[in-house]
Length: 192
Image (tube, rainbow, N blue to C red; front, side):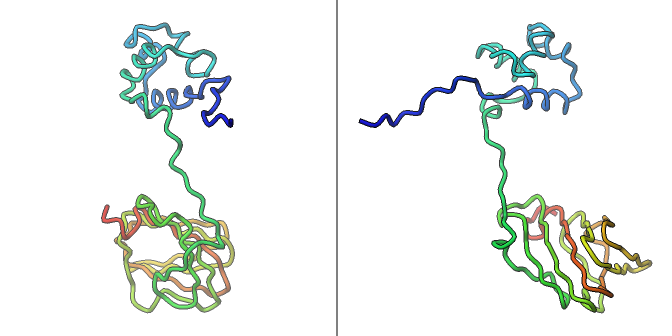
């Protein structure tokens, strides 16, 4: 008969890095956390380095000081891979660009678009805005010219420009180019 129960791991799950990140994000020292949790500074340091396995009571005390639930320490990271060949085609408008959304469809915090841009391609004669708080454009290769109401910029491979999503703009590619557009949050999210 096959055993369907998973075997216990020889080592505890690494939780130290999550505890350290939570502490540092709140600008708390080891000493402060130790005092508030009624533990020693050295013990907290060993827990953060995964050099010791804390008791449930100690872990609960540390989590309470850091404002974490025990469950948060054991959650898997919320990550997703989008393979370029599987990335859906989208159209942000303009002509001469083949655009792939390379972030997951359900990701509302950010949208990243990979654009392959033909020579002479453009975003249109009229300036436009995107429904996001921040827009960032990174040139992978080639050259793009970005036009705003009061200025214009020329971007070359390796350059990045970041501006408010409500800033009217358009673009033109004098040569074949590739770029990444990063929109925060995703325009469709309703978070703006």
